[in-house]
Length: 431
Image 1 (cartoon, rainbow, N blue to C red):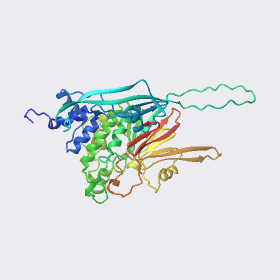
Image 2: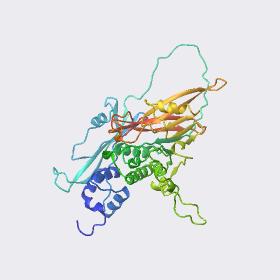
Image 3: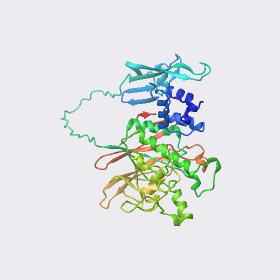
Image 4: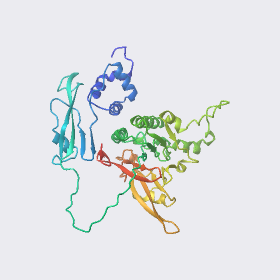
């Protein structure tokens, strides 16, 4: 490399161009560079591409989207002339070719030139990349036909149904414990955000791990510094915000987020509350270790829910009938922990903390016998399960997050998004 190099990325120009022209996302390129010991960001990659006069290809992100009786499937980019047939692409995505057919105009092939260092093609050779995209319809739409039934005549009263289109979509995601977030689940969650654009997002706590500040014994195999946790947590949150720029984000604190606070109160309590010098006529600065500054929450547009005390007091009301909190109780089985919290309140709850997923319900009766039902949701974890983060051998954890539809009158319908065998599934969507 000559002396005109202006960025550490220039030393990896060939690989970056190959990855980008093959259709990899910026997040995937960053993970590949991280594996080679290079730390960067998507902004740096964009600047480098502009400096190299390189453009992103016409590749689309491989995905499956089903809307009613219609499905859109985008395959992975391949080199050469061999593409999957539509039938093979359907089977690969778990759909039966006997039940689906490609509609007119629904067979699309994306093509672009890519640079490859594959020995089979020759170093730095330009090859043709292709990607198959199909739009299908069910051969037999869902319908239930019943024989006519002879009986007495009656007049059907017209139902007056008013659709309430002001309901909002809220997503609840937590226990990422950066830098231990599952990278594939993170990428698919960002795809989910980009496609569904929730109105509101609640970060349920334990965004960062901070293992050095834990009260547990040191575990060298899972050791990272506080700065590594903070840096990784910021980049992860930035991906969320960039994936869905109109989502309004709130952040709750979790017990891992508070490890610096707990260590200071335990060992250097007289330094608690220290902040930059006050300037007359201006609002006081925040404490030196305030997580809003550590994770740049203000610049990301993320509002911190400040508790009156430690993280267990952080409580966010999504509506007057549904609230979110990190949680502090861990029972043996999924759903048991949220039921224990429901015993303390008379409204529905979403919680993190347990790393498990569950939806459970409880019916409460007022003094006059009127019943009403509350719902509890344990949202799961976004962290890697394999290895138990170094402190449990065979964890009974589940990957995923929670969502809720919230109507203006406070009515809420919670749902779970599950990450199963490398696939993120929510409603009829699969990533």
